[in-house]
Length: 564
Image 1 (cartoon, helix red, strand yellow):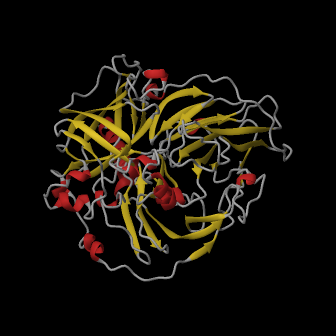
Image 2 (image 1 turned 180 degrees about the vertical axis):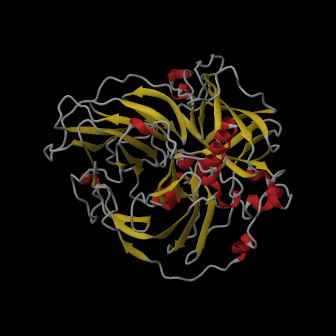
Image 3 (image 1 turned 135 degrees about the vertical axis):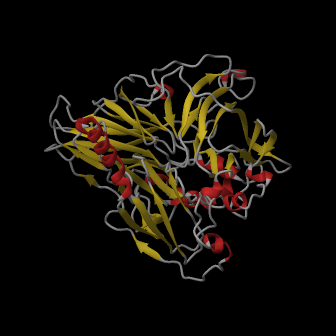
């Protein structure tokens, strides 16, 4: 009897928080603001006048977020990494799950975060607008965090490349005929919303301040800090480190991981990690560089010609330390294999679920056609099978088309999947750089990786992610890759148990804009989804004529200092 009562009590404690979920409400007022996060003054699209406006909720919460579009362009907001179980129409991918929010209009996103916990982010998912500043952290706190006893303070650290020109101008450049497929190079990098630009490269007549204040993270000796790292870049991959300190990884993309000690952590755009750092430097009072060094992904383009300093910095400052820049040095890399970062208490290697079907995906990025315009295409061996399909945003949302049991156009690169099925997806990369792929609405297990014909590395448990890089191609003519090189590959296993239309795309924004996208269509279970009445009426709503609203950035436009 006692055992039965204990089991009942345990069950009630588990389900009651979900039955009585709190409703958290937020408002994102989108408007233009003039800011200078790296010292160069320019216009950004911001929410509530703040760079990296944060949203924080708890496990099981209902969330209502009102988006007020005071911009002069349409937009949508995506909740990166959130499954949207039962609410696929709230995923926020423009042209996929909803029509854009027109200028002057308001839209309310309503969803439940379910059992998800960890580190996520929100960002515009329409015409590369998150590059202009429409982005911020989305944190789901876990009352049952298995690592809670191992840290004292929880901090969020955003990492981003930063462009002075608006995204539309950058896209126009990228798609210029005969341009050569060189991706736009950022002007600087930001940690916690702040960085430094070399003002000697600023155009004549612009406003720029050298030695811009960096973000400072104030710490107390002996305290343990959970840092939630989020790469919100258009393209940059960072190597993150804090001089003189090791880091223990405990989470990746909202999934608890086996504790893994590193001192330099590579992080691609769209990815998130939580690390625990103890303020235990031998010098109890001092300043240490926090580094996010940008990898060169633009070769052979002259990526430093415009003034970019790839050595992005913030300051890790101990209590009572002098207010000066650090002079510390970076340590020798301990090494880190992203594919071996297994899930805590996850699926053991060798116990992989059996899959129902296999898909093999190749892609191309480069100039095509008579005008040599940059284009990205995918080639699929499935079924379905196709060759050189460029994704184009549909005029009618894909989810609406699927709900009507109609076929998506070929330009949506549709891949039908059975509800509940397991699918093995192998992505091949013949490019000389890594490409990071993100899947909406799901996580996936990493089951193989490497270069074709090479064996994968074994780990204790499988890694589970929603954003992961495909290894680059190596070898070939002159060792430059791309011509006769050994292709990189990534094998992932997905359980498509979430009805909806879900994008999988390269999260290097320029590549997505060029068409490196596919759409997984799980419409067999859409009959169980409760669509709001008249949800797609907004697609026929006329554009409101409204004056562009411009706001001053608030004092919170960046974190000048973060208290211990």
